[in-house]
Image 1 (cartoon, rainbow, N blue to C red):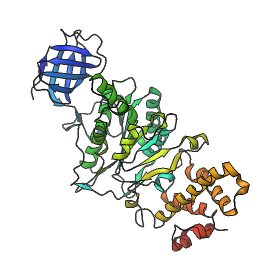
Image 2 (cartoon, rainbow, N blue to C red):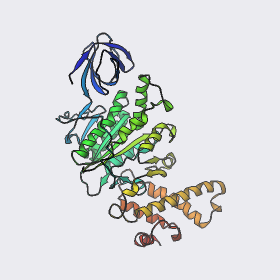
Image 3 (spheres, rainbow, N blue to C red):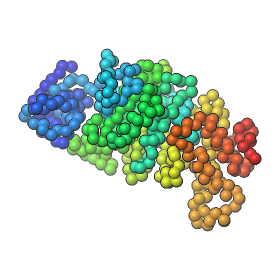
Length: 459
């Protein structure tokens, strides 16, 4: 399409500029705003109807004169130049390099507003991804092509968990495993932490980082995850790589969505968020998966902080509907000094059964997982009883389950920020903890697995 220029700004409402006489502006079309002083800003078309286009400006609209400002419509949507040279690079939330490296020059430019994977082409995720974290690998297994969010709250170490997963994640037999990391609305301190950790550990060499700061324009936060996913899809489906996409923090993304909806004077929905937020989130989450005939895959770990620690808040609620489980971080465990503070009881991986078993992890994986859940759940229930009647009122059996719950948190859940456990390490640790319980209580593991893996831990 040809570039068209207009000098017909009708009004400016916050970060949105309304331009008259525009008959053929396309949704998400990129725009260049030329200020009276010659300064140029970028923008994007949010809406167009009856000759009036609403343009979201990337940045401040201070000094924007309605009579002198020129608006240049490009005729194209936002397109990202992609290449394998993006690995090891750091970009801002608009896709501009911020690591002092050269800009990415590529003939291949892809529209960032990609579509969800066609259900007809989508294949069932099957391969196990090892994160090195016992509570995920053994109890809430991540499967290649899955979308598994982490639900956190303010003040919990979800950033540390994110970089640890990015640093440690691997797929057995797949050396072409890469990470695309996108952070939205973060502070300068968080951005420095991410860059420093990726560089120090060498993880940056197989990663692409997109960092959107809290001081950056809100509209940029809506672009950042789409830039990351466009990069991931290119690396996965064009270059046959196994890509893990980590998105943090989706709450900042949704707040930006609400802010822009308010600027457009849209009727607010639940808790002030736009009614189309479910659809908008699905355009991000549904871009993960495996595609028939393609060797590469895209796996997603979105991270969000639940406002007011409310798991029924629209952001975690809608995320839970679209994705395939959730990893829930616990403030109580954090207070005890346990890291990672993953509460396994409300956590769930709906695709876990597809990624575990003989050839994928180990034959005893399912039984160990079920037995750990059962033992820990019973121990947690007994804590409530102890608070009422005291530990002295418990029988010997109950005291063993109570001790098991404490040991499970201190030894299985708790691990160092640099401790990378294999799945075998995690399962063996589970069998070691089972030695605290009566053999007759191990009802969820097969006798032959007990003989092979667990009996050696009995004194």
